[in-house]
Image (cartoon, one colour):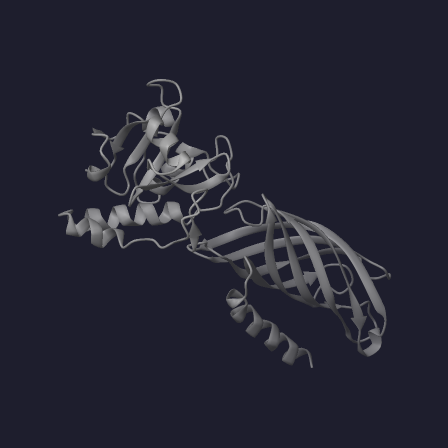
Amino acid sequence: MRPVLIAVLSAAAVVAPLAAQDGGFLYVGKVLAGNSTETSWRIALQQDLTGPLGVDGSFLILPGARPAEGELYGFGGDFTLLSAARGVPTLFAGLAGGIGFGGQQRLWGAASFGIRMPIVILGSARLMAEARYRSFTFDGRTGIEVGLALGYRARHHDLTLQPEGAGLYVLPPIAEILRARGIPEAKAQLLGNVVRTALEEMGQPYVWGGTGDGNGGFDCSGLIQFAYSQYGFAIPRTSAGQAIAGVAFRRDLEALLPGDILVFSEHGDEPTHVGLYIGEGKFIHSASKGVRLSRLADDDTEGRLWLRRWIGVRRIVE
């Protein structure tokens, strides 16, 4: 029975990205209390709640207390902190319960807490290490459980404009647009990749001083530095530094290229904010509500505000 269930769990891990969830993973671990050669299994789906908070719902197979044979089957739920962040630990705490089979015929419950750390991140896929302390309602298994989880986190390319509410945003074929404007192939591909990398961080929280590594969020200049650094460009860390990076370009919507840095100010000519132009009058930036899209436009309230604050353009790739 157990091999069949494990096969079902593995299949579910493949199908899980089709569900309306923010993520999912298949976990294989060792329960160190008792016989450490025994394996635990878990298939979990993740859902973001608000800000850095989220929840995991899972189906579990755990070894019971020996010498009796049989496993414990059940369901669990964990509240998580920072599960949506890239490259930072996820903290969690939760409850689980179910029933045992074989020689473990009993109702059981458990409370646990722990930490999950990404090891490898490739696009939406993640390989993670996990350590959990689990306390059971019976003797013989309370203790530490360690293992690996293979899963995914949804990368939200189905983006909506905020707050203009202009509907579903579809990333234009940036490289093709640039080539049509006479931009060389290599430069067109590079700028397209920089913009796409920034857009993959949509929804990440605003973090003062954030660069996406070690704290799970970005400030305005940290997002742009991150996007360019993935392709070998070392640009200044701060908005003031980025306001003089590269080459100055005229403040003209028709002349902008995706990848241009837009400089804004709330105090005359002093740079206070930056954004990355993506085309079609839109730019991506990390503001108080996190990484989001905005427009330079006269036909809505926020667009007019950004136009009034727009003081400069810097072009990094020449």
